[in-house]
Length: 289
Ligand SMILES: CC(C)(COP(=O)(O)OP(=O)(O)OC[C@H]1O[C@@H](n2cnc3c(N)ncnc32)[C@H](O)[C@@H]1OP(=O)(O)O)[C@@H](O)C(=O)NCCC(=O)NCCS
View 1: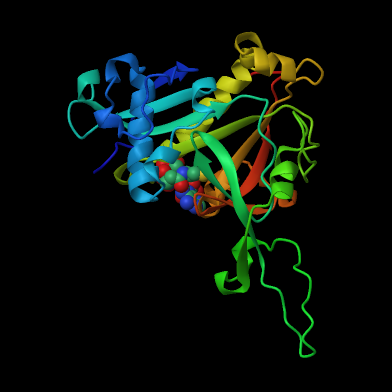
View 2: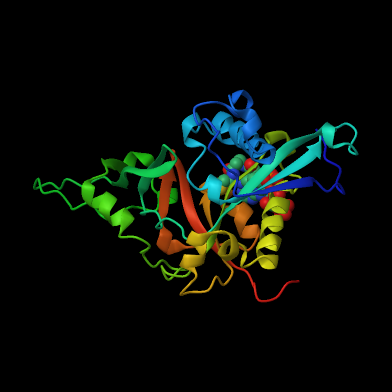
């Protein structure tokens, strides 16, 4: 497969698609009410299925979540080696979404999450194994370790307790402060970025992120104008260009190249068994360039 160096993908956009007709337990290609699903959103789900479900082994029913119907989605299409002039010859090869504020609270460092019925649920936490000393005493479990540097053999999984769940929800709208976020400022989140394996390494991922960042710079008040929940979130604190990603650990370099910085205070956590870190970027939304 080759992608011409000077080719620009055709990019489709859908804002806040309805997911009412989407059946979580069915693959995109066999959706029973396909005609009722926005075609761009279905394309995004097709790419996500190939990348997250097949390649990364995320369970099928965990892919669609509660953020999908309130997000904006982009899908990049490329010619599959054939005639590049006809939309009919193009295939969806990459996708990304922008989730508006308000966001759910920052993940708990060391926590393991799984999407149940579209909602991110805390399953438990990875902690360093307790040390048993010669005198029989046991050290208290220390704070969750930095996942990237701790071998799995030194970790222990502690199932979630009621206290953990309480700490996670922390009351409506409240969040903890991290290194790069004060816990209050509204921010948007880029997510579900995926490029089909044979189209990787051609800067399509970079193109998709840049497309969304350009869109945010041009439309900084979009969610305030179109989303009541988002408007309420910025009623007290203005959206000031803060962009977050929950990056899979292996993709950290990809986001670093785009200007994102790791938020050490967010720690490392697991989503569907995949380790993630938080990263932030500040866009200048007061001018367009
Ligand atoms: C991450 C992903 C979207 C990157 O897409 P891509 O089109 O191959 O990336 P690009 O070609 O735009 O790469 C842009 C730059 O990032 C670098 N890069 C790409 N993937 C990288 C990675 N995993 N780690 C470090 N650097 C990476 C490229 O080398 C390139 O650097 P350069 O500008 O110095 O040449 C793609 O690998 C993918 O779909 N992965 C599986 C899904 C996934 O993990 N998504 C991220 C969830 S957080």
